[in-house]
Length: 249
Image (cartoon, rainbow, N blue to C red; front, side, top):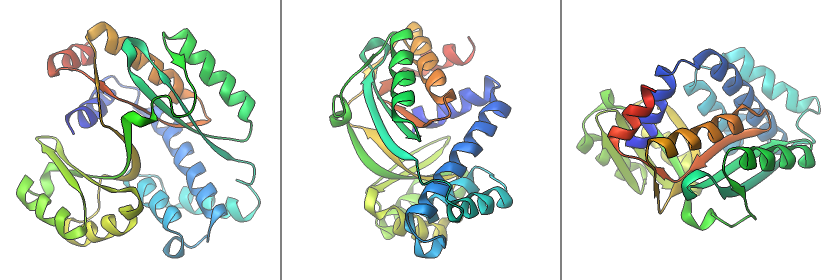
């Protein structure tokens, strides 16, 4: 939990919010369009779409943007998007998973490979680092919803597997196939979540010093700036002191 919320806070303090928010809205809208195209345009009948809409709402995506993204799926948009996962190593031997949604596999592969190379990383084959992660459902709540024991009990009742709590809030993990059901049950007890999504949870981590964190985060930022990239996950670990230094650098 600490790394998750700490990096979110650092992003906020480093002040890239407006540009990052616009790009995030675009990527969430793309996920909604593709999810609606692959299944039913009614979120109640399409678990993937329901989760996409829920995540969009948690990130304050306007209702009209969500509705427009669903309508696009019925107009033929989203037909050509292909979901691709890239895996490789970043600076300091950190494992990196890049999830993309693209209408041009060659373009995206070229950009991702080039970005890894320019920023001290190496793009590998699919599966080259995936074994260091578990696919999980993740539901995030602020600390204000209750103490660790309260959230733990709610999570157990909802069918979750694990809870990580600290001063920043609570992160609840469940099997990836159970995310829709678990998040719905948690909503009934704890209210609307800050975030509900599928994630790659590291099973082993790589510790970095300040220089390593700076290099890795530059790689992550450049990857995330690409319109085809939906999300980037790493197994980076860093001390509180190093993360604080990075936040102030």
